[in-house]
Length: 350
Image 1 (cartoon, rainbow, N blue to C red):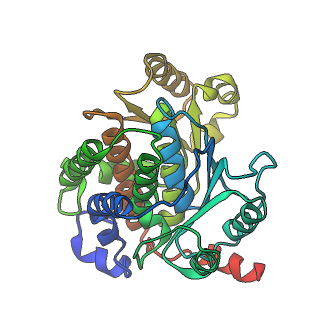
Image 2 (cartoon, rainbow, N blue to C red; image 1 turned 135 degrees about the horizontal axis):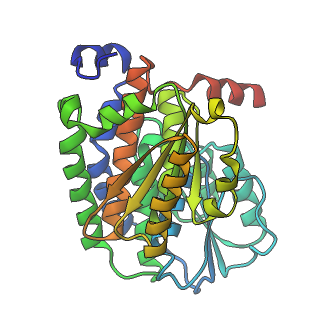
C-alpha cells in the first residue's frame, strides 16, 4: 500500500476515522470549555479522586493523573475493573463514573458500589444507563455529544476531567496550557496529515517501519500513559499486536529479557517516546536502554517531543501516535474503525 495514494484512503477508511483525528484539537478545546460551564454541587473537601472507566475513558483519567501528579494535593486513581477498593468509602472520596456510551458494565458496577458506599459520585457520559442512574439519584451529570468510537473521544475524556480538577481546586486555571496543547497538536498535524508526502511525513515512514513487527512502546514521566495510548491505538486501528512499558521500571526487569534468540528479537520493534519535560535521568535511561536493545539486535527508534510545556508535549505526542496507528492500518489495508473481535466478545458476555 502506497501511503501517498490518497484515492485508496476512502476505500479503506470507510467510516472516516481520519476526520476524528483531524478534529482532535478542537475536541480538546470544546471539552475544556464544556467542563467549565457545568456546575459541581459537591460541598465537602475530598481526599481522593477515583475515575472508573475502560478504554478511551480510562485513558483520559490516566492522562489527568500523570499530568497533575507533581502539583495535585490528593491521590487520583484510574480504576479499570468491576470492584471499588475497600478504602473508597464515604463523602471524602469522589468517584467519577466515566463511560462514553454510559453502558460499560465494569463502570456500572463501580457506580453501584460507590452509591452504596455513600461516596461523592458523578457521571461523565454521552448518555446510556449511567446517565439515567445519575438523574434518578440526583447526581452531577456531565454529558457530551460524540457519535464516533470511544477511542476517538479522548479529548472529551481528558478535557472534562481537567476542568473538573480545576473546579475542585486541585490545580490552578489551565486555560493557557490547553491553548498551548491545541496549538501543538495543530502544528504536529501540519507535518503529518494525509496530504504531506512520505518523504516529509515521519508518521507515514514510521508506519512502514512498524509493519510486520511485534511492537513495544516505551515512555516515561508524562509520556507513560502516552505509551499505553500508542499500544491501544495500534491494537484498535491497525488490528496489530503491541504492548507498552514504562521507564525507569523497564530497566529493572525487561532489560534482562533481551537474551532471547536473535530470530525472536529480530521480529520486535521498540519505539521510545521522549520529551524535554522528562526527568534528566529518564532521558539518559532512554538513550542507554535503546543502545542495549540495538546491541541485542532489536529494531528501535525514538520520537522526541519538545514543546513549551508538559501538556503540549502530552498532546503533541498523543496525536502523532494516533496518526501513526492510522497509517499503519492503511498500510495493512485494514479499516481502522471496526473492532469486530471486541464487539463479538461483548455479545458473548451477555
